Length: 192
Image (cartoon, helix red, strand yellow):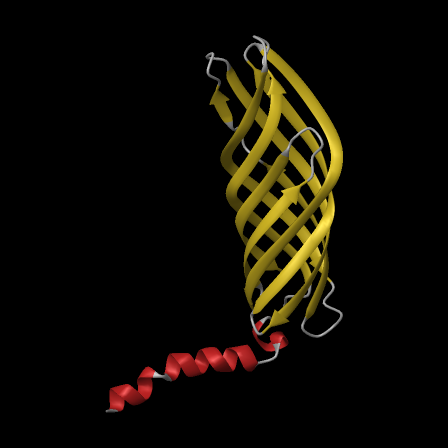
């Protein structure tokens, strides 16, 4: 009987945490933050085979990023931030039916504006900005390098407790040379 009375305590604490003001649980969320993340990067491209014909390339690899930002937090329960990041999308590769090896490498510097809303320690956010990218493309013995700047977008969810945030986000990079490039990452960030 006594055990049943205490069995509901974790549920009660969870409900109370959702009702508490964000500033209590997420104290320190305003200001400078630093983080790192990892997750699958997804590439899709169309290319020309030096041996003749075109090919469709769609592969995944492990991507990683580091980011630095500043959260202004000027409105209660809302986040307004700017964020810069460096992303290494990995080096996905594939072997075509004629035995030609195809490998793409892509890195980029990003600048984003973020806006998000918080309910207790849980927050949703969206971001938009630009990526300045560099790509190496190896198709058989042909090696080429490309670079450019294109739009980038993202959506995510975070759980923030005091100065520590766990983030899961999906970012889409509208890079002209690729059909699509995206990164789904899990990150840890610390607000100073």
